[in-house]
Amino acid sequence: MSILAAESANPLLPPVGEIIVGLIAFAVLLFVVVKFVAPRFEQGFQARRAAIEGGIERAEAMQAEAKAALEQYRAQLAEARNEAAQIRDSARAEGQQIIEQLRAQAQEESARIVARGEEQLAASRQQVVAELRGQIGTLAVELAGRVVGESLADDARRSGTVDRFLDVLDQMAVSNPAGDGAVQPAATTGNTGSSVYVPEGKR
Image (cartoon, rainbow, N blue to C red; front, side):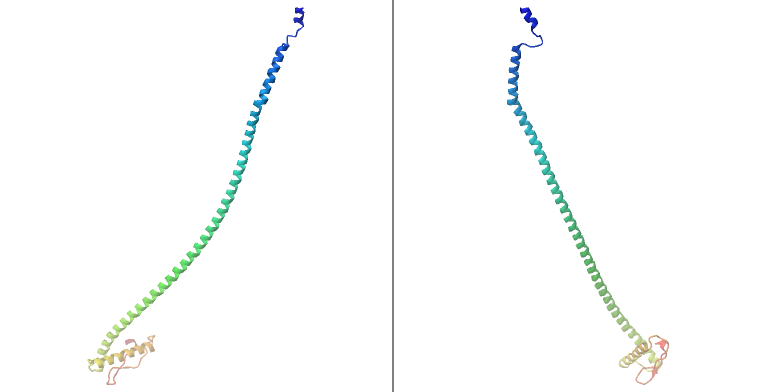
């Protein structure tokens, strides 16, 4: 009978006891996985998801801040350019004003120098004229004394003669400034009524 029972059993199927023990062990393992392992996987997954979502939010916030900073920088750059343009225009206007002031000062200084030079020239001319009047007076006295034939050593008579002679020269220069050689009236040389005839080119 035992041999027949052994031949009737399927060798591919495990014993019933092992199947029961395996089912119990699988149930215990499934309980442990569901009770302890799965929640930890879920917690790790949620933490990972929260970290990723937080990173995305932080990246978006940083991107918004960077965009705001870029806009602020552009606004500041535009304002700086406007200020630079205003400063450049102001500097150009101040430079033009300084140039005009320096030009006016240079013109005033030039006018003062010219006026001073004219004054010095007038003073030098008067000095030269005075020296020439003295020299011409001396020569005229000697010439008049020789022509008239009388002594003009007396200071009063000499002074009067010289003055009259120089007055005649001044009148000649005024009446005939071109120097065309015309004959002018004779100059009286003394109290005797004699006169000296002097051509225009010789006076």
